[in-house]
Length: 228
Image (cartoon, rainbow, N blue to C red; front, side):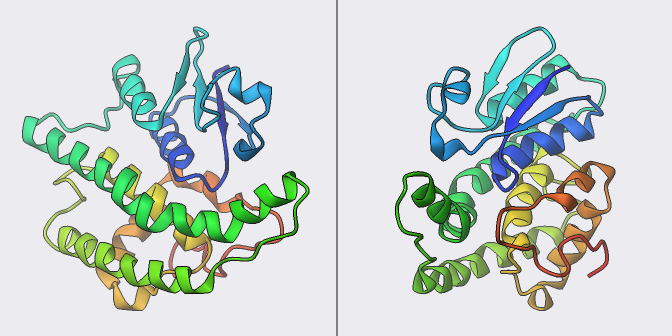
């Protein structure tokens, strides 16, 4: 069986998990505390990053975008890129938006401050370090701009990149779901984005996220609710 090495709240891991599930590909999962840089992971990916996918043929794939591109070509029966040229370009543009700008400004900042910083310090035998509340507030302010843009898209399209569910939706949901775990999105201000996200959460591919947990941090009360 193919194996995905991942971390539950890593948005890039979630992107690949959603892609595998949408394509109905069987896989087992190995949780990796990637900040520990254990040989078991660095032997697969010298950078020590997740996700890492080991496919049925033994191929080792790293980098979430490279992995989903590979899956699209290796398993084309359930396509997550649209057929139209411009729609494919738009899908890739939005994937890059969330994997770079949203990640650097929002999802990775919140994940680092609320989880990884503390866990990394603990693994090195250092005192526990709490989140920077000022940085969290600043990050949530920046996130408002992203959510306003997301609302602009979903108000004009059926899905983010156009008429069809694509890897743009997969990538955006992967990052949004991490932030939503901590309850850091004011959904009342973004009703159209909430409706889009509820449609994502209702898909069978999303169900695996409902049981994800990290030590000492419970998810928001609505995290596993389809209608919230």
